[in-house]
Length: 541
Ligand code: VG1
Ligand code: CO
Image 1 (cartoon, rainbow, N blue to C red):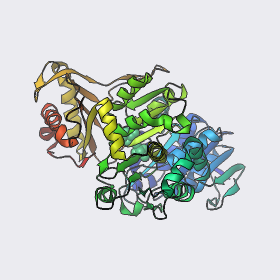
Image 2: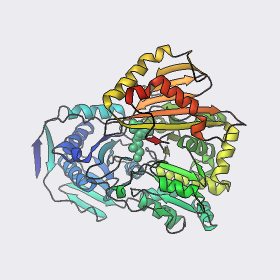
Image 3: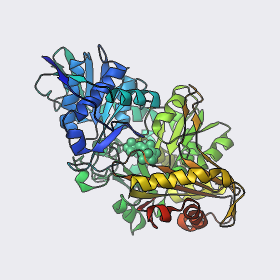
Image 4: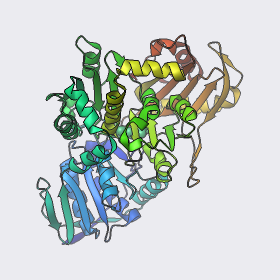
């Protein structure tokens, strides 16, 4: 029943910030998925092991799942735990890996990238702790893809993944589980559901936009069924293979309908959206947008209001490009603070070691030690818990937060699908100029330091170089530039902009206005237009 298929290495199977992502036709091409999956099994070993399998339901998810199951069986795996219909949100997969003490999991997702026959697909491996494989492991997988000569495949019919319960694939057990149940139960242990239920019962109105991606069933079950939010609170709640043509990235540009509603007449009290695989979140108050960096800081300052965090936080970790707002909260609380490279895999050791309890990224990712992924619905529920206890509006909570800590004005400008050689030339030139920058005055601000961020993991000592160019100004303003590691078309330049206002004056400005000099300085220093021809970003968050 087991065939060994002869293959040859395929170039470019290098995992990026979060797994291997390519155009769907690339993934569907001969041997492509198989080579990568065999490389995963060759590195982590499959014989006798148990893995979790699921994905965000995008086009090719169902067929890829059957291929992965046949390969797992052929490689001697003992058991696979699969979400019904091969569906699992990324945080739910992380939870199942931990709950069942498995040997890891394979998640099929390209997250916030659009899905469909001509859009994106992706595969990533998560470790037994539930978190994305660290760089050392993904590097080993990539190396394996450059040497591979064969893969193993079991000859068998499809497993009926629509049927919850135990199935067999040869000697391998396939347990098909409800994707929502265990995750929803975990959320009930962390948050004050009765308090949130009482808030909804008292007329609190919410809009939850799942963007036709994976969180629909989770959101309906938790928000509408368990917490009593009005029917219809959750929109775009049916996961579709092409996300209904939407770009399932919860930011003001792509979740525009939600933004319009939250800023329109008769806006609900609270709005939220999540991404393709359910690990990102955007939260919006009535008439006020919450930047992800501020969201992390507010949640850190208020986490103790939720039962799961009543004992307080060990520390807060943020990715380097994320604003320093959370650092101010950590300092005030007297707890640890950490600055990591972009990508959730860098938080895993801090969470495992009990050094950090909350983590966040400026890219709409927030999470805690309850799983080892960022978790969109978790963040939305923590906000709801805070709102239920404080009985204030989002605007009031943000205003009080800024008054207490000052405000880190923040924005990210993305320049998408730049020719790779142009983007590389720009970054190379910028790197070359770093040593000459300190002392230079731009837009009236003096550059205090400039470097290329390197990170030494405080737990295992591993070093990650070249994680983003930082230009720090004497007044606390900051510019960061890096190239995306999740895109599938050309290069995406991410320009991160930050400026601190201590208050009490000047806390209520529009972020783009407050950042205008920093934006001009960034264009001046990096020569973005000269190198790329771009004057305006494609996406502003
Ligand atoms: C982006 C974000 C990063 C995030 C990553 C995966 O990476 O910037 O913060 O961890 O996506 O998120 P990059 O390399 O494109 O900047 V997800 O929700 O797409 O898995
Ligand atoms: Co995601």
